Every structure is written in C-alpha cells, then in structure tokens.
Image (cartoon, rainbow, N blue to C red):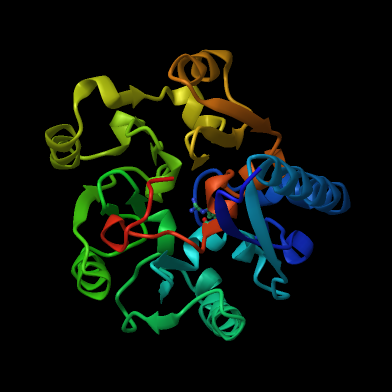
Length: 291
Ligand code: ARG
C-alpha cells in the first residue's frame, strides 16, 4: 500500500494523568492503579500505531520528556502545513514546559529533512496547535478555534504565517476544550461535528460553507467515546471505538473505520487525532491531491 500520510506520535513512557485541566481528566482513577494504567496506555499507543500503519500511514515516533505527560498529544504541539511548523503556546502552566521540548524535537525533525521551517508564535498568544486549527484538505483552509485554550488573536497570526484563510470556530464548553474533540473534516468533504460545542456564529460559518448533505452530526455518546477525535486519511478513518450507529453512518458513506481502544488516553481527554500530528499536510495551491 502506498504511504498515504506521515504522522508524528510521541512514546507514552512519561504519560500519566496527574492534573486536571479539562473535565474528562481522571487523576484519581489513574492514581488508584498507576502501573496498570501505564501498561494499558502503552498497549493502546501500540495499537494506534499499528492501525495507522495498516491504514497506509508512515508513523514517526519520538520520545517524550519526563514531567510532561501530555506530550503524547502532539496534535497540540504545532500547526504544520507545506513543511512549515508553527509551534503552539499553551494556555495552562501544566503544559507550558512542552513548548521548549517540542521546539527541540521539531528542530531535530527539520534537521532530518522532515520539516522545512520551524517558527514560534509570540508569547501570550495562546494557540494549541492542530487541535485548534484543523486543516481542511478539500477546501484549503483552517477551521480555527478559540475559547477555552487558544486565544482569538491567534487566528490572524495563523492566517498571516501560512497565508491561508482561518474560519473562526468559537467553542462554548470546557468539555470541547479543543476543536478536534468535536469537529472532524473527512476526505470526501464531509464534516463530522457536535453542534452544541459551537457558538451560533461558528455554526453559521460552518453551514454557509458546507452543504447540509455533507454535515454529519455527532451525538453526545460519540463525543464521550472520543470517536469524533478521529484520524481521517483518504477513505480510512482510525478512531477510538465508535458506537455502531456512527460506524454504520461512515461505512454507508464509503469509509473504512478502524476502531482502537484508547481508554487510557480518554482518561486524559484525548483520542486518536490528538495523539497524532500530520507532518506532510500540503495545501492545494502546492499541487497536492486532497488526502
Ligand atoms: N490532557 C490534555 C489537555 O487537556 C489532553 C489534550 C488532548 N488533545 C487534543 N487535541 N484534544 O490538554
């Protein structure tokens, strides 16, 4: 199978749930059995790697850093397009240490030829990477969120840096603290999303741009299963174990869904998409085929 995507993952060696910066996080449950949870996280991370490889992806794995458990979510590390990486600025002090660690990792990726350029946002301009700026391969723009984590002024910075439109998607709830928890563009142009997570204006921005037959509404249950937080590569979708209904809807539309049990990472409020970062996203202007 030809390589469909190059995806960064971070080893779960230093992953744990020791603080609570989103309402899904369960530090108490983790603390009851840290060894068992860590072992389960290791298995789940391996399972995701295998699923991505089977979906035709090349997975680039890098080590995390001690004391920075949420580095396993590299979707938050940066926005990457056309070989250019714009590194995140984290809202919470618990994650701010990741900025330096990811900067070093991304410089190394650049030195290996996997990236062309690495840049940083100014301090104080919060932006949590591809978790809040989701590239739409069909439409050649970013769906860009602000609210719980990223700040509104980050949208203009992202637009300037990449020279691409940022469609504003304001988030209303702490449960959907990143856009990728509740919003997932698919390769065929559909958008899987959870409407209550978005402001009325964000819903207008979406519905003005995407025809109704391409909008797939996710349910409360899909959200809680972290199935919306999916990796979509061509006709392949890798997601935390979905409900039968969602799987059937996607199959009906011609997608092949690979479920992965990501329970240990859901204890931190994460699913498949946030455990990955596409390194090879290319804009249409550069002659790329949407994937
Ligand atoms: N515990 C992490 C946090 O709250 C989870 C991040 C998941 N990432 C994502 N893009 N949704 O920051």
